[in-house]
Image (cartoon, rainbow, N blue to C red; front, side, top):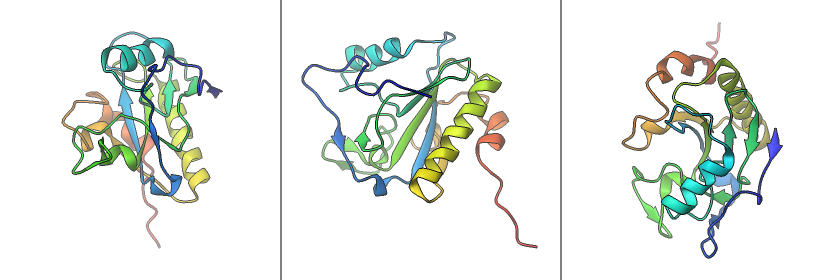
Length: 165
């Protein structure tokens, strides 16, 4: 894991709001949706320059070799799943207030990316002290994200509940 918090392209005048980490309920999985192993700078520049966001929209970005990059601290309410939100709070879709975003580069994740995303989600659960819901972006917004192969790798990402014997 490599932290790039505060080191990626950011908007010169806009900034993300902050939240109490206790508001977070979800880990939301995303993909960049292009068949390229984008650099973090490219993703951040797209979010800032094209979309006009304050900074990169994900807490974590995972490159195709499985390397994880921390992009935003837990307290930041970044934009990554707001378009389908049931409410707007301080101008931001409510899903963003209660969710962290993990994004992988590409269209379909590599085995290394899937393993890293699971590890990150497990680590976030440990940090919070409770299990966050693990959801595809498409569960919260009208989008095909995180891609057509979600059903194939979600079983690894989302632990099967233990059934008492």
